[in-house]
Image 1 (cartoon, rainbow, N blue to C red):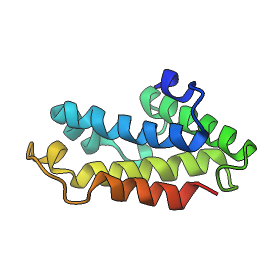
Image 2: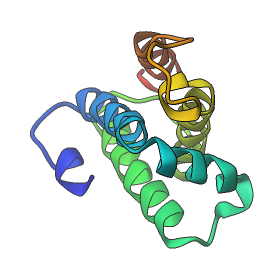
Image 3: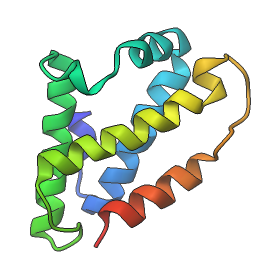
Image 4: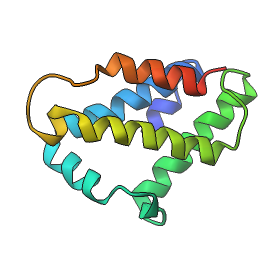
Length: 120
């Protein structure tokens, strides 16, 4: 994940690549995705993976804000909102929760929501 956000791509491109990575990781490992969703709650704060992802996203958001590419706001709070959007998408994704092909909500729609929520 760190390599992804360390590229020369724009902050917006990095954000969308990160969203793809988070979704595809669980799609490629649906049993892990279901386990993650079972325990992914706002109370997950304090777990190392959750904190690491939150920090990485907050750093990306901070860089995007400095470049005037992302909306203003507390980067950690925005990071948690991003996590909420991605987790909600994963929770309804048949490839993760049902081992079934197809999408209830196309990933392009998730990207559109992320774009409207975070990009200035």
